Length: 268
Image 1 (tube, one colour):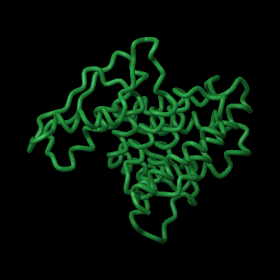
Image 2 (tube, rainbow, N blue to C red):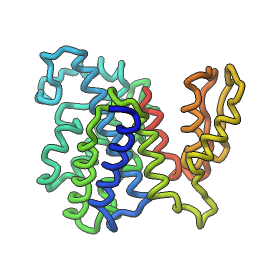
Image 3 (tube, rainbow, N blue to C red):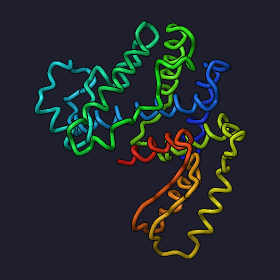
């Protein structure tokens, strides 16, 4: 599958998820839930690959939580920065999502457990609050538990339907999903407060102009980072450039850029 076909498949699946929850979830909130679920699937797959370490005889998702010893957990946290028990993996939660009457609270507990697994370790500052904007008990998902669970299940099933693994994809799944969501569902959010989304083509042009003729770059800084579109496009231009000190962004309204954290963390 080419990068173009992968991108088309990703966007098509996101559109399908939107149809499943159409009219129920505001565009800005929809973005948070889809990206949060994508991220949950990503770290689940990433952690599974780490535990299995290429050993085909090990099927981590099928193991009972009881086989996890304190030593295994501690070693994993020291290496990966967090821990996910088999029962907490995306692939296991999505299996029974449609029939789980406690889906919203179960997900909330899983996200809390993943974040808490880093407590007392060097990774704690990086993991703390990772799922802060993925509020599975929010009334924005519905006024009843049944409505919340139904929409969460639709989103989980929709993300499961993306027919590519993160490790095997030829595209930046988080960056592409983020820009597609922003462009189609959240571009108008915040305009009443003076906030505007910079279209990807404009961000890309700015990044190209800023980096034209550069062999190396000290750092990239956006003082009004907003949705992070400019930084994401700048990152895409660094395939042939050397960056020395990294990317930096500043934003007075944290709700406009929290999802960029997913994209950044996904590179770890």
